[in-house]
Length: 357
Image (cartoon, rainbow, N blue to C red; front, side, top):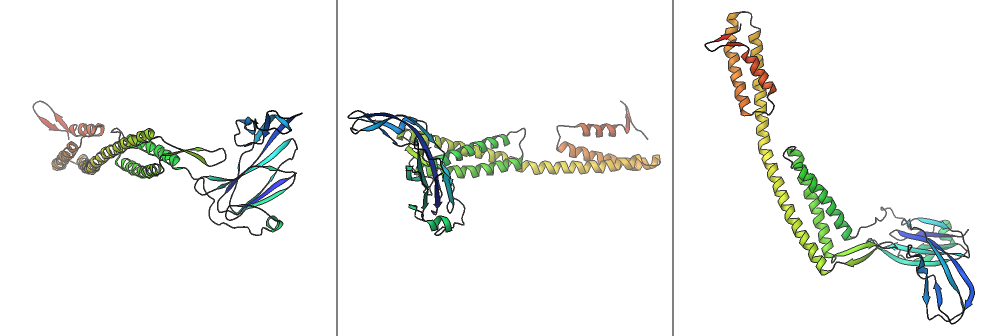
C-alpha cells in the first residue's frame, strides 16, 4: 500500500487532503469529435461531482471518452508546525488519487501550494521547508529527522475574518444588553448586580467598537468559507455600506441612552440604600431595648417595682414607635404583634386607663 509522508517545517500549520475519483471509460475511440477532458479541478467542488469532466470542442485527438466520474472528496487533515504525518491509500488503476496541500499564511487564509496532484503507485516523501515551499524529503529527513524545525510556541489559531469578529462582538453585546435590562427591573433591582451589569456592558461595547472599526477599515469586506480552506471575500455595495453605518449610529445612540438610564438608577440606589440600612438598624436597636425593658417590667416582684419600671418601659416603646415610623416596611406583622403586646399591658376603657399588674 503506497503512502504519502509529509513533514511541516513551516512556522504555521497546513492542511492536506487526499481525494479519489472513479472513472469508467468508453472503449470506442473517437476522432475529430467532441472530446471530454478529465481531471479538471477534481475535488474542488465536492457537491458538483460533474466538475471533473468538461466538454472541449477544440480537442481533435484520438482518446477514450470519460462517460462517468464519481468524485469522492476526503476532508482536510491539519498538520501542525514541526510535526509529520503519513497518509496511506489503496492504489487502483480505475480509481485515481490526488493530493491537495494548503499552507496557513498566519492571517486566517491559506495559500494553495498543491491542488489535485495525481499520486502514483509508489511512496511519496515531501516536506514543507521553513519558507513554505514544498520540497522532496530525502531518506535522512524521514528516517533520522534531519533538518526538522522545533517550535515551542502554541499552534497557530484559526483566525476569524474581521466581519466574523464583528458579528460575534455584536451578538455578545446584545446578550449583555439584555442582561442589563433585566437588572434594571424595579421589582428585582439590586445595586451590586446592576453595577456589575453596567461594567460588563461597557466592556462588551469596547470590544464591539474595535471590531466595528476593523470592519470599516477593511472596506466592509465580507467573507465566506472557501472549499479549499480559508475564506473568499466580497465587499458590501455602497448602499449596503451606508445602511450599515446608519445602523451603527443608531446603536451608538441607544447605547448612550441605556447607559445613562442605568447609571441614574444605580445612583439613586447608592444614595437610598445606606439610609434605609441605617434606619433599619436603628429600629432593630430600639426594638431590642424595648424588649429588654418589657422583660424587666414583667419580672418585677411587686407593684411598687412595676410602677418604677413602667415609665422606662413606656419611654422605650415610644422610641421604638418613632424608629418604626421613620421606615414603614411593607410587612408589618412583627410590628403589629409588638403593638398588641404593649396594649395588653393596659386595660383601656372610654373613661380611664388601668395598668394590668
